[in-house]
Every structure is written in C-alpha cells, then in structure tokens.
Length: 197
Ligand code: IMP
Image (cartoon, rainbow, N blue to C red):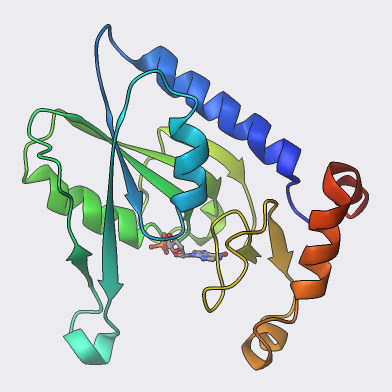
C-alpha cells in the first residue's frame, strides 16, 4: 500500500488548489489527459476547478525494431485548437520523462501560450530526460505502481488507492494476482488501507 484513497484525495485537493490559484482572471486552461492512465486523476481534478477545458490524446509506442527510432506517435490527437492557450498535461506518473518530452516538443510547434505538466506521481530516480513538473504530487521510488487509473493488462484502474507491486513476475504470470488484495482493501475503506501501509 503506497497511498490510501484519502491521501490521494488530499493530494489532488492540493494540486487543484495550486493550479486554481495560478490562473489569471478569466483564464481557462486546457487540461490534456494522456489516455488512459490519467482518466481517474482527470475526473477528480476537473471537479475541483472553477473553469477548465478538457481534451485527451493517446500515444502508440513503437519499439526500436518497429520504428527504427523507438519513438512514440500520436494515435488520437486533440480536438481543441491550442493556439494561444495555456496547456496543462495531466499525467498519472512521470517515469523516464520520454513521453512528456516528446509531447512537449511536438506541441510547441502548435503555438500554445504555455505548456505545463501536472503529475500525481513522480518517479524522479528513473528520469532519463529532465522534464520540469510544474505541479507535482507524490515522489516515489523505482517500483511498478497500480490503481487510481494505472493498470497492468487493463486491470486495476478502478482501484481507488495506489499500491506497489513487489514481484512483477507474479503479475506477468497471473495478471489478476492482486485482485483479492485490492478487493479486500476496497471493501475495508480508509481504515483498512491505512492499516495495510
Ligand atoms: P515515461 O515516458 O517513462 O515517463 O512513462 C510514463 C508512462 O508510463 C505513464 O503515463 C504510464 O502509462 C506508464 N508507467 C510508468 N510507470 C508506471 C507504473 O508504475 N505503473 C503503470 N504505468 C506506468
């Protein structure tokens, strides 16, 4: 157990508060969510802001052998025109920083007013590209994390707390291996989640 439901909600409160107080009078930022991990964070975040536009994009990642470059490609692009607008990328977790550095550089060509990053989790120790995070939540170590939108094989996104996986091999062999752990702590609520820390 890394962060309970209550702890995450308090962190999102704080991130939303900082973002809200950075807005100029009448300014409406565009929150850009990366599909699909940012879905839960995005839903919690936008309901705490007074005025916001929302859009999503999804990336497909190529392996080195497929693309020759190992780079990502935008698979589903934004629908809102971002020219002259304040853009905030909303990320569940920043790991190597490669995704955001690719997105930031390709979006700069579209002439937004500014591009910022909001991330709930920051795996700083694993960073390859030093991308600045303007609104950062929790810093975590080098571990694979599930819940609150983050998945393995599309599972666990619905879990309202965040937990680390100690043995990735277990998950690879049996993707639903952590189901009973997650279900029990979802039923037990905040008290059970605190006790599991
Ligand atoms: P980066 O390009 O290495 O910064 O990767 C960021 C993306 O990798 C995130 O948006 C997630 O989709 C994925 N990711 C990184 N770490 C984790 C994790 O611990 N659990 C689930 N997905 C992760």
